Image 1 (cartoon, rainbow over the protein chains, first blue to last red):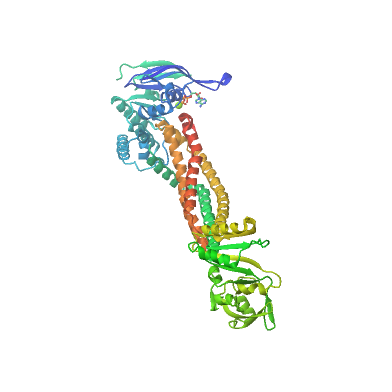
Image 2: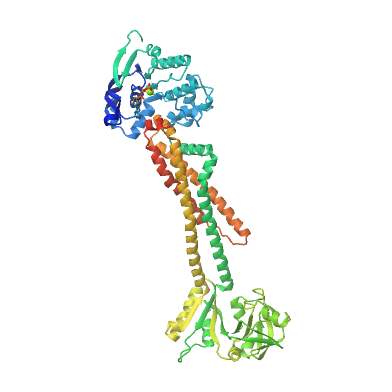
Length: 228
Length: 391
Ligand SMILES: Nc1ncnc2c1ncn2[C@@H]1O[C@H](COP(=O)(O)OP(=O)(O)OP(=O)(O)O)[C@@H](O)[C@H]1O
Ligand SMILES: [Mg+2]
């Protein structure tokens, strides 16, 4: 499903160059739940952005469902981001002047779903994160945890096969963080492939496969067979 | 995303910042209104001038004959025959013999007459003059060389305090009877069209101390045949003189044509000047769109990360620019029409030009596309991750 081969991401050049990713190879199969851990600045987000087709590697190959992403046109990339991937950002990234429901509708809008169906699907996704009654509010009228749930609903709305979550619990207290994690686990049980970045070792401990990154390299990739 | 969605998105975004949207539109509003007001006022001026000329007679054809030398000449009878032979083109004609430097005297009062002309019985009709008291010059006056005259209100007021009918008047020392007084045309002022004496043409040459200047005025059957009638006279005179320099034939409708041409050029130049303000308005739109693209970089990044194609982003911004300029265009049209009506309150004639409205509106829509395109293109090319990181 997701196949990174020898990915480099280098910022700057010569003396001052920063190797954000220094030869990453990673394979994620359909239905897996993978967590990526590592210290700050180790390259987790950079890696996630490349998987999410938001950023382009300096070198290396990335195959998504067998297709080389580097050969895709802008429109094909947009299509992939829209249909194949759901991104949950650490900073929520909601559009402030749109209502919660309109925010959740966005991926459906670009998918070409008709207005009434869009509303229905968006409300359903909001229901799933427990915010079915907040559709007409604006993001600024919600708490941080609620906003993060909106961004999860937005990632779910189009029912993408892969969800990429970049520290979704980073800004939340441990209780809400817990809820989010349980929710992602639930999604994974339903068949969604999930890649989760986290700082939190207690969260990583609950996830079957943990990939540890340091200085842009994968230093360990362990699967706990006892977890399902 | 389709156009309808892009449109409602644009409306929403414009409504979100009304003051800014209005200021953005202001350039377009003023530009469109200026084009419409200027064109309608110039149109109104043209209409005034043309109405004036038409009231003077769009069917009037003036013929002056210069070539007096040699044995080739035309007589008044030749000219009258021309009318009689071509009733489908020509209705009537009058000689128009100017007596230069005429003076008029009543008892010891005297004055210089600005225009003293010898004419026949058709003159008042051809010139569209109305005899208010008494009668005009008649056939018998000319035929029997009766010393009767018709005067304008300036002379009637100056020499007779308005009680002129039936009185005697000395014109260049010769005694005439005032048989008619013309309706006032120009406030009875000196040297205006009220400062006039009309005498039978058969007497005009006797009134002159030195010479007279002769011309003929024809009346065509209708405005539509005025050009053919002019040609007919032209052909006839060319046959007589075989030299186009010997005479001159002109008609009012060709003059109206040249006035139309002149004012059309004028209106084009003025509308061009107003068009520059439209352009400035367009640059205003581009400026605001560029700012708005920068401001919304993050939003663009979010939309792209959720699957917006470059086209989706571009259409969002282009539609927003077009919506801005079109709303501006409509407001400008309303202001332009209102302004044109306001001009009529100041005694100006304003004729609203539909082509000017359509043109300025489509120009403003085009400005929206043209000046919205560049910022929109910029927005659509943003790299999603760079846009997301933008603060
Ligand atoms: N646009 C950029 N220009 C230059 N350097 C960059 C850029 N983006 C990231 N980096 C560098 O790449 C390295 C990896 O950054 P990245 O954001 O992937 O870290 P991270 O593992 O997500 O850290 P954190 O846990 O703090 O989010 C860092 O050293 C960072 O300074
Ligand atoms: Mg990060």
